[in-house]
Amino acid sequence: MTLSFGTDGVRGPAPELLNKHFVACLATAASEVLSTDHWILGRDTRESGPALSQAMSQAIAADGKIVIDAGVVPTPAIAYLSNSENCAGIVISASHNLWSDNGVKIFAPGGRKLHDHEQAAIENRFAALIEQPATPIDEPLSVVNEHPDPIQPWTTSIEDAIEKRRLEGLHIVVDCANGAASHVAEPLFRQLGARVEVIHASPDGRNINQNCGSTHPSTISEAVLAKQADLGLALDGDADRLIAVASDGTIIDGDRQLCLFAKDLAQRNQLTNRSVVATVMSNLGLRQALEKADITMIEVPVGDRHVLAQLDAGAAILGGEQSGHLIFRQHATTGDGLLTGVLLADLILRSGRESSDIASKTMHQFPQILINIPVQSNPAQLPDRFSEEIVEVETRLGDAGRVLARASGTEPVIRIMVEALEEATAQREADYLADVIKRATN
Image 1 (cartoon, rainbow, N blue to C red):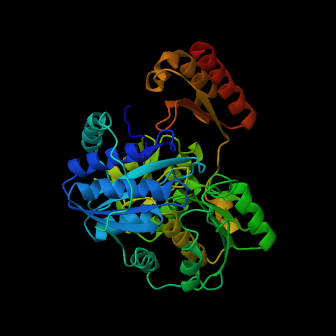
Image 2: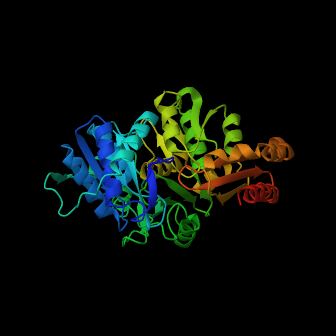
Image 3: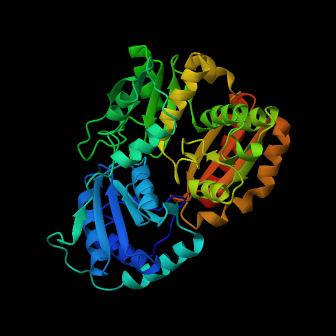
């Protein structure tokens, strides 16, 4: 069995792939590679989480390290504690996937994502460990301690991000995706003075992300309209991403959020280098809107670790992905859905405008068609085989469209993305490329 880090950690079916032996070997490998004797672990609400957490905690403790269990907490809370307490962090979560999957995200001391050489070293050590017989795991070790308060320091930092301003007068609906923020979102927004209603905040181990959360924005859109709210916020299972909804039901995805925040920071002379970092998946409309506002967009591959690398290099203080991972480097070391939601609510109040007005006018969103094509062989090698067909489509689209074909970092699929002025055009060209790849790979 091999281990390969995707765009955001390791992910797969549990226990078919992520079982106790697998994650124990991963924990031991990470413990040996990262030079720290202090680890903090958190998890989301999946049924498999407690057993996997116990296995990883016991493996790290057996390596002579201090292990602190934070329980069910959002991923950004672990990143915050990893930074503030200068320890390594692990989050057991499959993010936006359904309950039957699980995953592992690792933070080095300082709350940062792993460097490539660290990932490679962990993968190599794991390959040797996984071949050894599994060690029985019975009772939890007494050396694994519970964190006294993993939530309050992190939420206080979010409150501090809006500089003592309040959210009074704003009616917000939050979709917690039956995930790790289910017990956190309502108290945070109430503390800031907002009128808040939460939905999908009753996790049962198997309902995480089920027809709710950031991957099902129609759910929060319907709730905002039904409740006549000012703003809707939809988190994913581990609360490191956010998709928002304006008062008229308009979706405010990661691109629109990035555009709003970039323009706002630039107007206040707080946007370092007048630049933002975005990925190759970002909408053509974002690129055009930023260019019109004299803001440079730095393009990186998909994955928030690539965004963060540019931010840490000092290129900018703001970056994100269309999927809703936004990183405000002056406030956090990773994507944080609740931080983003609070900052967005604050931006709306400061503007004195309706969220629907802000969302509709920030940028023109080009129709974007996405198609995932399952493949059997190594998908990383496939896109280059179809370069002629891709160039052919790009020529037909001209400056009014864009094509991206890439291998997924988390699944055995090729992802095709086509943008065009008209949705029908984008659909036709995406279908053409998908058909070419399907015929060649089957």
